[in-house]
Length: 438
Image (cartoon, rainbow, N blue to C red; front, side, top):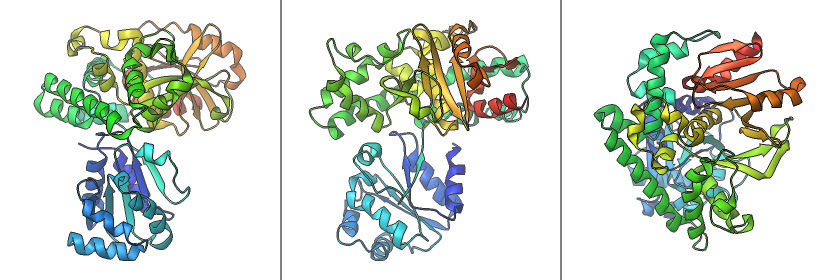
């Protein structure tokens, strides 16, 4: 299955100031596959080392910091000659702290070599400290809706989306099938194994079982990798996620985790899940400003999961909802739809999205696009009242060049309101650019 992150890896390969690369991402989003595919397509050869399965390789890094000796040992042990056109892959690098630290020596002493690394729960290890400026980072997430279309064989639909160059209504011949495909994406999500099972076997129950297994593997990581004093609390936070998102006001409440719970008791548990890339935190801003991060209220945030399919399964929403008109989009206050939109935004905008509230209103997301601050309202169906975003505009008209609404309505630009169908969320940055130019 084709992954767009291969384009980013090629840009890294061609960069004059390339450093060793750390590929971050949750477990089972396809990091190992994409690095090996990268090696097959764009290098004369690659060496793959998995520090969990090949523990004997750890000693090469424990005995010396000389990267040329390390490369010599890797070459002899693997039976492959390491050249300057060899991709060196260190997988599960969190299992060998010396190898993780050696990345800075590759940067300083052997920058001509191509070194990439990945690992499970690597974000937790990196949160404990890592030399700044010695590595490049790249984030990998679950498959996007566009990648799902490609894997599903819907090339003509994807070609139509890629060909959109202006803001005009989408014909029903494309609109209706895209809505149906998006429903299926909400069922399978973008975890590669679940997508593969669906696209190859058309067995939705088998894909559902894959998601259940992934959730179990995530939960087993709590006990394996978290501090023993936090395991119970992490589990409670994890179990509370569907109920947190089912509220009208989706602000994360510690009291919803356990009666009487306080931030100081559960903050570490929330941060562990975020560092493990299992959840995404979206902070509140009380007003827009540049940079957007300067406006954060760090005491108020929403939490979403890394994949809409995992959220559906974790929420025990049956696959049969696919057949019930637009129920998938509106289920439990549109939480699946918001989760999906957040995934799309994170892939497109360098600055992480925020959300905005005042005493009575909430705008689902606010993004920074270059020096423009754009509010985004997410509507799960065709009910597109814009009470909150219009109230936002009344307060910040001079700082707001465009209002964006994502829903099941057709693509249009009404004054300064850009209406975008949910299945076009992956194209939002492009569409905002077109709208602003008009």
